[in-house]
Structures are given as structure tokens and as C-alpha cells.
Image 1 (cartoon, helix red, strand yellow):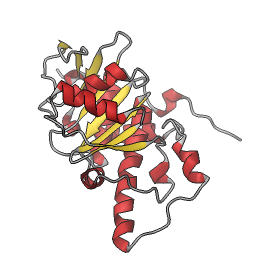
Image 2 (tube, one colour):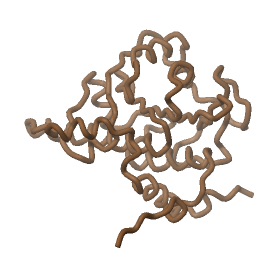
Image 3 (tube, one colour):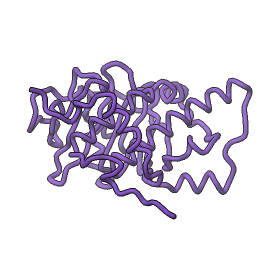
Image 4 (cartoon, one colour):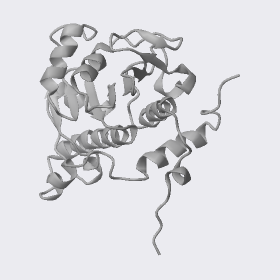
Length: 245
């Protein structure tokens, strides 16, 4: 007997703003928790972007806090200010129409490899599940909130799916919240495991053809993973999807 769960059995219907909030909260638990750092943008059909605002931790974000901005970074809906580092996202969305969701933060182990300017090897299956190409981008040619600096960083990124921003943090891209969640989780696990393996004196990288097989993933293949982590957040805060009185 086979069982193919429908989407509504795994999660309730979610608005894009609710997906953004759940993405932020699930990743906070995964080490994407550098205080007020971090931006998530989700491109909307009209070209505007949903975004988490400045001043709020990812672990306290709620749907009513989500703002909508245009590609100039102007708030067109919402009552909170735009994060200071948003020029990187604006430049990315102008240049990469294939990207729907973009995420930047300073996760614990991803930032170590970004500081070292090295892409960590993939040592195990779970570290590879997000798929995609990772590159190192040296973006510190000017202030991180400078549009010209942001545009140069996006140009250096090319068509890669993830970047280790040297001396800064990580940038994770995808076609959906599900894809970016899987990629962000796998990237941090990859960085964490590689750090420990290197501390032991080294180990064998995931061999071919498995490594190439996983790299070709668009981040959406592990059905149920995103939903399970989102359900954990909804169980922890049953009021999360209810409007505040």
C-alpha cells in the first residue's frame, strides 16, 4: 500500500507572508540567528517584494510584521522600516528573474567558511540535499548598503544558487520557500560537518556519482521536510497564524 499525502494534510494553506515568517522561524533554530541580522525577500507577481522588517528578530516575526517593498526599496505596504542591507536583494531581483526567494544571514558555521573564503566539501547526504552551486563572493568593495557594491556582488555571483559572502555571511536563492529552506538547512549542515571533519584531520568527500546527483537538485525534492519543520513552529506557537488583537 502506498501513501501520497496531500499538501493540506502536511500544512494548512499559507499566504506568502506566512511562508516568509515560518521560513525565518525554522531557520533561526538551524543557526541563522545572528541577532538582528538577516533579510528574506519573496518576489510577488506584480514585481514587488515581501520582506522581513528591520528591528525584529527572526524568532519573533509574525505575518502582520511583514512589509512589501518595490525594487527601489520603498515600503509600499506595512508599518516597519526596510532592513539596512536590502540593496543586495534589490540588485539580485533586478538581475535574476529566475529567483523568487532570496535569503541572507550570518549562520554560525556558514560564516566561518565565508570568513575563510573557502567552499566546504560535502561529506554526507544530508549536507547535499539542497543541491545547487556554491561560490565565494568578495563583496566588501564598499559599504554593504551601497547599491553599486550590491550590484557588483550580484554580478560576481553569476548564476550560482548560493554564495559565501566573504567576511560576511551567506546568500541562498531558490524558486520557492521550500527550496530555500532545504538549501539553507543543508548548507549550514555542510559547513558544520566539514568544520568538524577538518578538525579531525580530514575525511572522504561524498563520492561520485552521488555528489553530482545531489548538486543537480533544485531544492524541492525532499517532500515533507519543509512541512515538518514548519509544523514544529506552529506547534510551538499555535497563535502564529492568528491576527493579533
